[in-house]
Length: 316
Ligand code: GFB
Image (cartoon, rainbow, N blue to C red; front, top):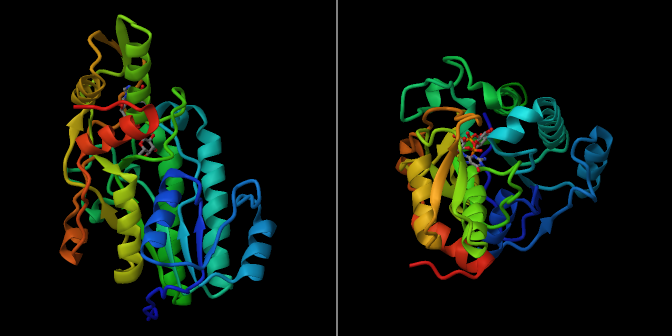
């Protein structure tokens, strides 16, 4: 049986990936809550793909609690193009960190995955029990396989070594410290950038990928940071847990929402040579809700906040 632990304000906490969108949101949440004993390393300081470097780091620092938010991530095109890198690098990072958490007696570790672990055509909303019940979406199969391996590692280390390792599966995310590279980013930062630039440069149309029909659910990274803190303090089960907001929107309506908030008057052009990906991936959030956690930031407010802070645009 795993021991239950609750982080104290002075507990030594390692956030792997603290400069990324998710890791930085976890760090902000914990800082606001008064935690003050962090051990942090940028990817330049510690290459998490390097087994020996990770082993040395854990032996030297001996963190008590670990949030594993470091990963190679990207949108549909990056996932589909750099298939080997997404599989290899994510497996390396999570193997090294999860194993060293065990070797060094970390009290509790939270592993972060993704909603792409579910079968492409799974019933909606996606319940945790649907894992491994069907074929994966091909554009992100390598990334999904790595994340499924991470879930299974946490389960196996719990069963064999009694480690208190838990896993959370967030839905599609956006927020502060997102990636705006148009070839590598996810859809929301790409659309925000495309519409802002098209308005500034008086372009007659904005190009949007795919058919616009896929449905996606979007959670603000700030809400996820908050959920990770909540789970670390309150969740000790072997089964991973979904983190979503329960609302979905089509890519077409998402593009129209960004267009409206940016006040862009031109047209939308659909580039159907680009893949649609999974038709739908709406998380079933009921397990987390029963525990008492709900998200706070609506999609509209979240996009408005980004337009204001990053692009200095006041949206209606
Ligand atoms: O966010 P996204 O790249 O990833 O794309 P996924 C979502 C949908 O938006 C797809 C469409 O149907 C895209 O074709 N889309 C429209 C665009 N315009 C654009 C654009 O300019 N850029 C991008 N990127 N998409 C990812 C997975 O899948 O979701 C990862 O590849 C991960 O593994 C992540 O799980 C959460 O939602 O399709």
